[in-house]
Image (cartoon, rainbow, N blue to C red; front, top):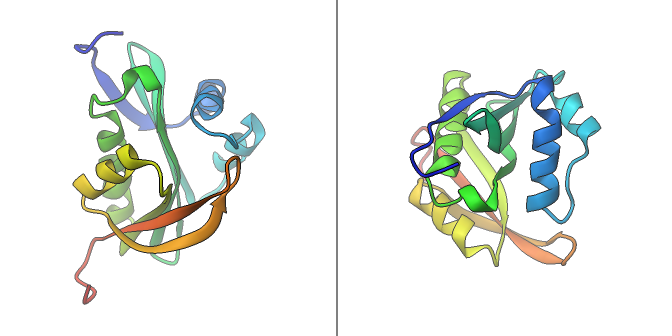
Length: 155
């Protein structure tokens, strides 16, 4: 895969589960299992998207929507495919879907030490609005709660 490869974003399908589970194992210390990902395909509140380059899954984003609120559960991109705009494209696609379905905001947690991700979210209009103590395990670490509002809610 080179820098000129075309990346497409589409809803996650059952066929994508093995690749997404592989991404989870590469990118996270507490990865979701294939079964957990498969369950989300049947959850009407879940909206999972994959990014494909040259027919291979190179990234994905998962979001849950509850009462007009959208929460990103996970976003990841293969390490060798980072810094190519894939994560931003996934964020934008998730945001557009959430807006279309009437959500007022989109929110996520990020490790306080993950500068690259924090900069990505800030660049895309997210603000740190709080911190969850000891949110992550392996290693134990705090998380920033980063949120982007779609409507002017006095913030």
